[in-house]
Image (cartoon, rainbow, N blue to C red; front, side, top):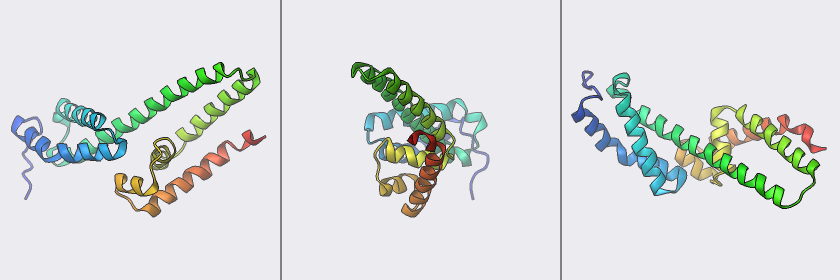
Amino acid sequence: MPDNTKSVCEQRVFEEVFNTHSKTIRNFIYFKCRDSAQAEDLTQDAFVKLWNNCAKVPFEKAKSYLYTLANNAFLNEVAHKKVILKHQQSFTSIATHESPEFVYREKEFKGELDRAIANLTEKQREVFLLNRIENKKYKEIAEMLDISVKAVEKRMHGALVSLRSEIEHFKK
């Protein structure tokens, strides 16, 4: 029977949570990003946030709270990398001497695509970004998210249908 009187704010309990879950959280993030240093950093950040919010997190919810923090931190990193990539690509298009109309249309399309991606459900967006930005295979995504490959396919299909319908007018 679980001890409901445990508080994550107690050093002994926090150490127990850390010793029990730090390796699995780190592995969870590593399988998403394939970068051990980033996985270590995001894991440490998750535990720091848990400690800072320990009074708000019941002991029995600490594990799921950590996974949520780590996953959200990873998704924020992906979004940040996307912004950096977009910024780098804008310099590339300027350097290639493309016509102003083309640069404008491309910028307009990227903005529309970003809005369409933002309108996806969280599950669809996560699968879409992992597949199209991080180049993960459906099987890898299924393992990372602990879902079936069929579920990944369904989320990706829904994402693509939604994106196609929202950016249809750019086909001209």
